[in-house]
Image: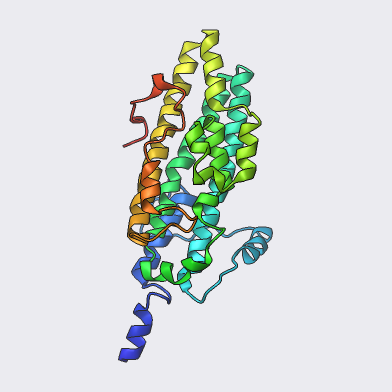
Length: 276
């Protein structure tokens, strides 16, 4: 193998080495197919999407550069949007179930939300395999498509509980004015539904299960944010964020922000049920 060929293979703008690609596939499997035995001796393949999904996938990658990892990065962002879209659906159904006093159904739906939140960590681990040089080669074109401009993530926050005034006034919600307007117009939240159910003073066993799930969701979300800060520190360093924020310093500011800040009685628990 000639020196020129070796330089091409290790170029941060080209296809990663086989070991990195295998690592990405493992994390993708953890996200897409939880419970798969990754240590099994047989070769595991990602599920083959249905024809209509394949057609959609072909239309959803619109790269702005020739960097190999940009395709991969776009897919990771889209997977995050898909995850929060699904979580929002389950959150709305869980809120409705609590209002309808079907607490067992609400607990089942919230268990799915927590499981999905846990799985989201695999997406950040996938992105962590990207070389900073590759990211900086195309990040200048990502204005308008940064994580801070994710409407589905902000809807997730709003469905958990109405954010405090400082959070609603931050760049996080200034970047998604439509979602901010939805929240200010008033919407039912998991926090409100839970507090109303507690006020009824009935079915303490089921309410305790929901409280445990709320604590687990809070803890999982905090771990997710902490992983995001670690990843951003590696990729961005001292650079400004692509959503016109201060970058890593901005992310650190909100690590301690709680989704369920209006439920102080559930604070201080580290989600031990799922943190193993």
